[in-house]
Structure formats: C-alpha cells, structure tokens
Amino acid sequence: MQHASRPKILVCFGTRPEAIKMFPVVHALKAHPAFETRVVVTAQHRGMLDQVLQMSEIVPDIDLDLMQDGQSLDALSSRIITSFGAVLDVERPDRVLVHGDTLTAMMVSLACYFRKIPVGHVEAGLRSGNIYAPWPEELNRRVTAIIADLHFAPTQRARQALLAETIADENIFVTGNTVVDALLETKRRIIADPGLATAIEPLLKRFDGKRIVAVTAHRRENFGEGLTSIAKALVKLAERDDVAIIFPVHPNPAVSKAMVPLLEGIANIALIEPLDYPNFARMLDASDLILTDSGGIQEEAPSFQTPVLIMRETTERSEAIEAGTARLVGTSEAALVAAANQLLDSTSEYEAMASNANPFGDGNAAHQIVQILYERHFPGST
Image (cartoon, rainbow, N blue to C red):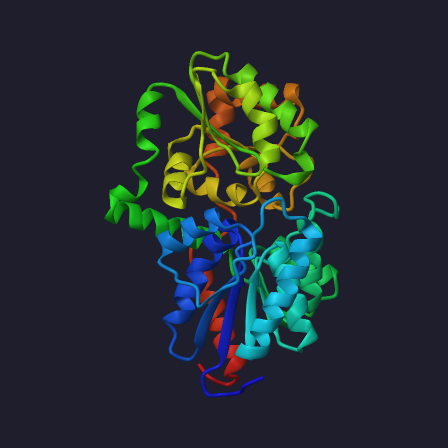
C-alpha cells in the first residue's frame, strides 16, 4: 500500500442507486486537493448505471463492465471479487469507499480485506433484522460492516445498530444520507437546465388534473406472488377516475413478466421505461403519492413532501415511519388499496404525512464524509 503525500482513494460502485448516492462524494473528493481520487465501476447494472454517470458528469477511471444477461448472484460475486482484486493489485490504494448493500459493496470489501486495504462504508448501519428481507441486501451490508474501518451512518438509528454489533464508537460517523445531497444537486441542475427533465413532461401533461400515483417495484423478495398482488392492487386503484398511475418498469424480466400482462392497456396506467435520474426526480416531485418497495425512495420522497407507502414486510429505514413520512403496508392487495384510498380520500391524513421533515439529512453528507477522511488520513490537521 502506498503512503504518498496524497492518499489514493478508490471509490467503487456498480448500480444506479449507488451511483446516485456516491456522485456527490466523488465530486467532493475530487475537489479536495489532499486526495488522489479514482472511480471504479463494476457495472453490475449497465444501462441504468450509465444514465447516472452521464447526468453527474462522472467518467470512471476503470470500468469492469461485469454485467451479463441472466447473471446469478454467485457468478456475479465471483466476477466482482476477482476482477476488483486485480484492480487493487495494480492501483494499490490507501483506501476504498463502497456504498450500501449491493454485491459490489460486499465483494469489493472482501477483496480489500484479503489485501488489508481499509474500507470506508457509506450508508452504513441500515438493518431490517432479517437476512432474507431485503434479500440479498441485508447480508451484503452486514458483511461489509464487519470489514470496514470507517462507517458513515446516515442516522442515529443506524449508528445504534452498528454499536449493537460491537463496531467501535470512534469509527462511526453520523453524516446524513448522501441521497439528499444528490437530490438537491439534481434539482439545482434541473433549474439551471430545464431540458434535463423534459422526458416525463408529456406524460404529466396527459394526466393533468388527476392525482399522480408513482410506483416502483423490483425487490427480489417480492418476485412472484408479491408482484402479482401489487399489480392487482394497481388495477383496483386505477378504477378511480381521479387517479393516474405512472410506473417505470424495472428492466429485470421477473418484474415485467409479473406486471405487464395485468396492467397494460389500462387507460390511466402508464407503463414506461426506467427514467434517468433528473426525470425520475421530476416524477417524484409531481406525484401525490408514491407506492414503492425501494429503499432509496423512502429517503428521497420526504424532500418533496410526498407520502410513501412501502410495499414490503420490513424496512431498514424505520426513521421514515417514525417521522411519519412513510407507512409500511406490505404487498397484500387489500392492504395496499385500503392504505392508498385512505390517503387519497382524507385531507387530514394526507397532510399529516406530507408536512413532516425529511429525517435523512440536510444535503451536507458528502462534505462531512470527505472531512472525516481528511482527518483520518492527516491526523492533527485542521
């Protein structure tokens, strides 16, 4: 490992959510003269990752391009650890930063462990308490936590979860979630250049006057019966004349096979291709209600004062529920329809959720992370 005057930091990610949440960290690191920063992408998701790279103006220094059609989790895991291990042997960084709960985060961390290279974990400490929900993300982040020596926790609850796993207090830093940084930066870019988010506008114009319900669904634990039940609930909601549903369909074939046959051809349901991040942010901003099994949207939606119904049995983001910005409803058709109708029909219920502040940060997480890295690599400096 090198110990030059400018420590080399490798920032590694592989999926669209990681890219969204890490681009503020990359920009903050590259702006700091103390570090040599290089970006490595595994591209375990290809097209959706590239959308964010283009929008955020990040050109990876190393692109492993590992995605394969129909890839299994174990085959992808082996490709990540061997390919990234080879990168480490050439780059010999002083530290690697990973994000969250992906296979990239876990396998990159493991490759670092084999070489005794320190790992910083952004968005550390999220826990559902069930290694099969979300699957495989819950185990991915737990293994990453065992290896990492710096833990950038988004909230106090995440910090407490790490302390409960005997992570040393002095290695845990509550920074807020970088997704708020990303969202606020994206909003600034859209204001400066409205053309960044025009793809969604014809659809919003088509549904003008209706209440927009945005939907995302892609969790592996919902594959099969869960997705079918969600689709049936959307059919019921679409019976309302005052509602229009916008559903960017995840590219995983398991999602489209479950959803499209039940939902296509319904006039006020728009099944669309995945949106790039500026258009996705615009959709969230224009929505009256969000139904999702995504983790990140639970963190993003409160910045738009948009209530969220979480279509999962557990969530590792309990702060959203405690803050009143989201409700956990599962995937039951009846429960989803009842919860959505309650919010759409009750002004007081709706406003009670919409008025709550975002519990996940103020948009300053990336700069805090870089400052902590500086203090760790240059002890005694101010």
